[in-house]
Length: 488
Image (cartoon, rainbow, N blue to C red; front, top):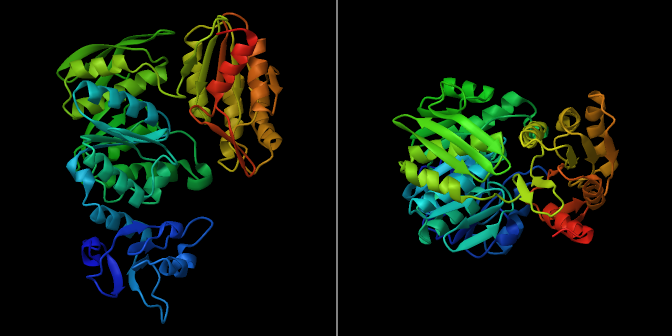
């Protein structure tokens, strides 16, 4: 594709070079440069892409995209723009011929529930005879392919390439988790969303966004950049959802349990076997039955139901899809055993998610809840004590342990969590820094009728310890310990 075509509708400060130059690819990572590529010199938190321009040119880059002027005597096509990230997103959309305009796109943002909603919608769309693709926290997948996700929402060139690949493989829809980082860094600019979804908002990533207002402002961008301006789906029961509804200029479908929600759950029953609920919506009602458990999953089901209606999916296909989804990896995932225990692993890694999870387990009426959890290192420290407080208020015994400590001292992280536990007045906790040992202690301490909840890592297959990444999956570790205990 010619540079002039890649730059269509991209705001420029200046262009120096030959606009008929052929571009063979786009990247922001100098190690991926191939002859004929456009190199976007992005400024990151730790490195500045401008430092790698010469390396990119040595490898055959045909053009450079930057917010800085062209250095003197540098012989290459130089594109100077106001905002490199925004320009990269629009250039990538042009290069891959705007694949999002040729399929139905659903963007899902919020603190909790994004991953589960993509799984529910994926099952619904398949039941309706469509071929969905998914871009999210666990994996990137579509017709005949699945890749482990490196980040929730990829950088713009990777995102556009993935959408193009999905389209070429026959995908009719794409369900995309859209993180606050991706919105703040403009990775999804140039993407046309048919439906934008807001699940809820609670404290997370405040090391990056600093305040809840800034965090909300980042999430809200999904709705203002929605160029198709079709439909918003918003949680009526969430305080930040109410705030969003009041500010939205587009058609909005609300969901929740409150009477004013357009897609509303009523007469619901929650137990260890799943969820049964009457869902009322404009023009009808349907009884849904799901193997998923917990009130938080009822909200996820209602969100998916609302999106499916916006996509004109027949109610019967919606019901069948909801019934078909048995579990979501690492999301309130039950580990079967012969000890009479209810064992779950879950990705909950914020205070609000932990509180919601513990409430869902309590609704199942176990004798006791034994909770194993920690907090990630080099991440938002403000949530650690809040997580400890949520645990202290709701769990019967807590095993404080490591999550992904990264460069931090695991015990230092644990002691920050402990401050929140102590605030509740409980003394029913143990400090066990080794995660495997903590899980083993919890399982050994448990008695028939108890619930053992291992939270924080969910689907993850690794643990990050300083500069090492070691294999570790909570579900696998639990099964190994159960086998040693004589349970199958």
